[in-house]
Amino acid sequence: MRGLDARDCNSWAQSVVGEGMLGRATRTRPGPHHALRGPWLEQCTRTGLLRGHKEDEWKDVKLRWNPDDYGGIKVIRVPSDSLWTPDIVLFDNADGRFEGASTKTVVRYDGTVTWTPPANYKSSCTIDVTFFPFDLQNCSMKFGSWTYDGSQVDIILEDQDVDKRDFFDNGEWEIVSATGCKGNRTDSCCWYPYITYSFVIRRLPLFYTLFLIIPCIGLSFLTVLVFYLPSNEGEKICLCTSVLVSLTVFLLVIEEIIPSSSKVIPLIGEYLVFTMIFVTLSIMVTVFAINIHHRSPSTHNAMAPWVRRIFLHKLPKLLCMRSHVDRYFTQKEETECSSGPEPSRNILEAALDSIRYITRHVTKENAVREVVEDWKFIAQVLDRLFLWTFLLVSIVGSLGLFVPVIYKWANIIVPIHIGNANK
Image 1 (cartoon, one colour):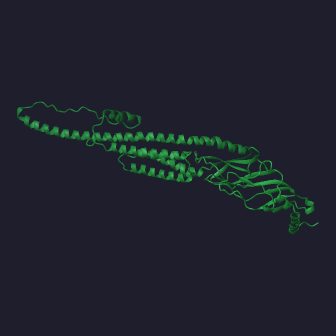
Image 2: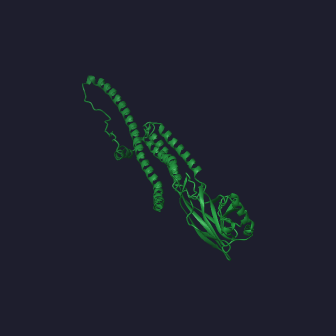
């Protein structure tokens, strides 16, 4: 007994079609049960769109035949336009297109019809960018009949897990879980079944961590080094300004990456704004420290006693700086001299006047120099004080913003991956 070739199969298939089963199937609706298998998620974009396609399967008693009567043919492929097909659509459609491409259906001898229309279903979802780039997104796709109620077409969920065999790896997103559930919407007269597929996806943070977060943290700590430069260096302001410009560029980059929304502010955006305020304050403090560094008796009044006590004696010890030399001393205004013989009195007084003049001049120069050195030392104390203060604020701010993200990441992602590994 020879096997059937392609021409024999085509002839038997045409016999099945020619007996009028397809014509009856086109004009009438089959049984009320319709099975919807999970959509195959293909791609997720940063704009909050899910793309996928579905597989429909139902029973049509009018499309049954005996394989023995048709040369053993058990499966035929028929254009979908020749059959009744369910109007299962994606309700929360993002592009406004509800119809799929016209393609063939797979019909089995027991009346099982399988139809996989090659259509891209785009569903929009609300993106929560609070923990960007360590964010989790929960998106859903809701399918149901557009015109039939539950008494006419009932949707059966075959499997709660979405088929991910045809999933294409995406360099930005990873599926954490994908499940389906059936629901019913009722009104005064009818009930309408629908199936909702929920996708929990997470962003892969490696790219953004290497090229966005680490540079931002580096710029934040680079601001601290401004206070390590000597106050007489003009590069302090240049360094602060360069860091501020760099942070502005990073903020523009994040604005291009993250979807625009006023409901939530991403933590990375808050961190950048915090760092920009941080740098702005450092510029103001640096200007003040430079002003202190260049003070002198000719431009400012005498230093207040409490300023000397705090910035020249107490703070240097707290900041582990070398103590400033105590320059408080009692200076005699006049120099006493013993009276000498009357004939040499005029000569001695002239010599003493010259000595007093030179002494007063040298003392005045020393006093001016000491005051200038005191102001410079106060500028150094301020730089050291702001160095430790800004370093502490930078560390606390960075930990305060990123520790909650890491904690959430460890409590959600790690258990899910452990559960998947145990399965």
